[in-house]
Amino acid sequence: MNGKTVVVGMSGGVDSSVAALLLKRAGWNVVGVFMKNWEDDDTEEFCSSREDLVDAVSVADRIGIEIDQVNFATEYKDRVFSTFLAEYQAGRTPNPDVLCNAEIKFRAFLDHAIGLGADMIATGHYAQVRERDGLFQLLKAEDGTKDQSYFLHRLNQSQLSRTLFPLGQLPKREVREIARREGLPVAEKKDSTGICFIGERPFREFLNRYLPKAPGEMQTLDGTVVGEHIGLMYYTIGQRQGLGIGGRADGSAGEAWYVARKDLARNILQVVQGHDHPALLADRLVAIDASWVSGQPPHVDWVYAAKTRYRQADTACVLPVVAGSGFEVAFAEPQWAVTPGQSVVVYESKVCLGGGIIA
Image (tube, rainbow, N blue to C red; front, side, top):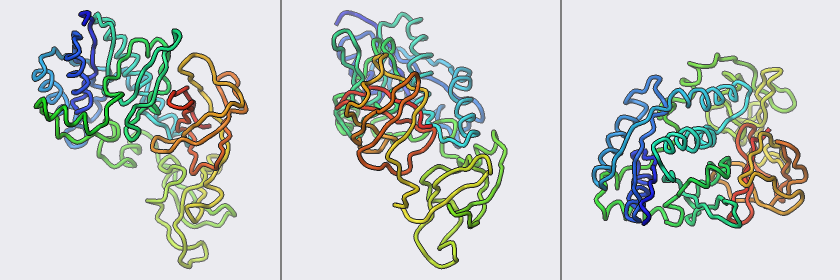
C-alpha cells in the first residue's frame, strides 16, 4: 500500500481483532490502541477490561503490530456517564453506546490517534463509509443482522473522513472463520454485551448507587392503583418484567402488564394490560438534539425509513417538521413502545442520514 498509518481501536474481541488483521494484510502500518473507559469499581466480577487488555495484546503479538493502552475514563465520565445519569434522573432511557461512539471512540480516540501520527482510524463496527461527490456517507453493513449504523448515526463529516470499517462488507460468520484460520486467540471468544460500567451486575443496584430511590404508585390509565414502583428511573416504556403485579386491576387473571407512561410531576408509573394496548403504540414522535451525517437535514415530507430501537426493522416515514435541532417523524405504521431518551435514526435505503433523541 502507501505506507499510511491506521490506528485501530482494539477491544480484545474478535471483531476489532479481525479488523486489525485485515488492515495489516492490506498493507497499512497498523497500530492498536486499547481504550480503558471506566475505573470505578472495575472489578473482575463485573467488568472484563483486564482480561480484554490481555486478549488485545495477545492478538497484536500474533499479527505483529504494536499496541498501546489509553485511559479515557475522565472523558467518559464527563461526556457520557454524566449525561447517562441526567437522562435517567429526567425519567428518560438513554442509549450510552450512541454517546460513547460520538464522544469517545470517534472524538477522544480520533484526537489521540491523530496525535500519534495516524492518517486514519478503524474499529470493528459493522458499517460502511462511502464518499460521493465530496461527501462522506454512513452506510449499513452488508450483514443486516449485525449492522451497527444505528449506534453510529451521530458521526459527522470530519469523523467519517478519517474512519475505516474493515468488516462492513463481511458476514459475522466469515469474521469468525478468518479468526480461526489465522489462529487468533480470541476466535471463539463470545461477543460482549452491554456497557462496561454496568457489565453483568444488577442494573437497579448499580443505578441506586448514583441516584436516590423515589418510590411511588403504579396506576392504570384511569387512576386505579395496582402496585408500587421503586423509582421511575428503573423502568422503561414497554417493560414487562420486574413490575411485580399480575392479573387484572380487579384481581382476576388477565394479560401481562406493561409500562405505558411515566408521570414525573406526580411520580406515578402508568401501566396497561396487553402487548398491543393502544397506549403502547405511536404513529408520531418528536425528536431533539438532531445530528445529520451530511451536516444538512433531510427534506421535509420525503419518504424515508426510520427505527426507534436497534433491533427494529426500518419503517416507512416522513419528516413533516425539521427545524433547528428538532424534527418530527410520522410513521406509516404505529410503532411499539417509543421510548423517550432512545434514538430515532433515519435512513434513505442503505444510507444512514442521522437522527435525534426521542423527546
